[in-house]
Length: 238
Ligand SMILES: [Ca+2]
Ligand SMILES: [Ca+2]
Image (cartoon, rainbow, N blue to C red; front, side, top):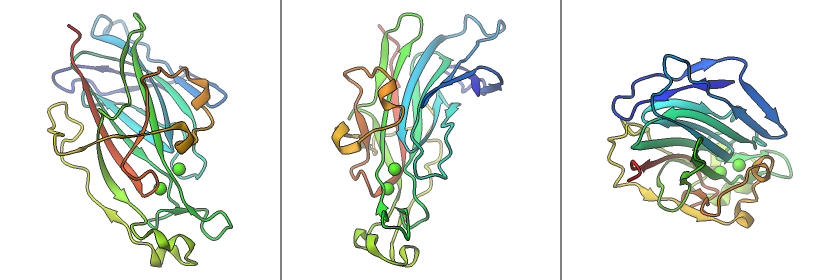
């Protein structure tokens, strides 16, 4: 699938328009190609975002939805990189929802098998201006993070024969307006950076040339934090 999105820095002006027939898939990398229409050309800049998440993401630019993981969250092994083109203006506010796979609210996966475990997450993204190739932003500890689902809170339940009954979870609603560029995220946490050894990224990760400044990030707990909200804003270049 492809998205043709023009995102205004002021009002979240234009909804992403889903267009057909513009996607390519090579290995574990899906490429969504935005094709700004003639009526929209000249508005904003075209950006390219490369994203890899263990396991799922959805993202906005300046308040407008621009992309969602092509691999559903309903599977343990949802690993893939995506490259997404979108048109937007500075200042550029990006928001991302990331989800680690959980078989149910217990937070565990492979339940009832000899691999029953607390799965872990991981998220890396970089954004460039398409024409200049200039790096605009990359995931780092400077990104703002707010975890809204944690499970299991009592990690000892990992070996339980009935995780849904014995594992505890905590969940919060998404804050109102959190995807708006003007949302105040000062009470949020900074992202925690993790090494590739800790995240063990796979399937698609190696097919992207990650900038040296792009870090794998997640919440403070790589395993227990399962649904996370992310924000970053890039000022207009001086
Ligand atoms: Ca996972
Ligand atoms: Ca987890």
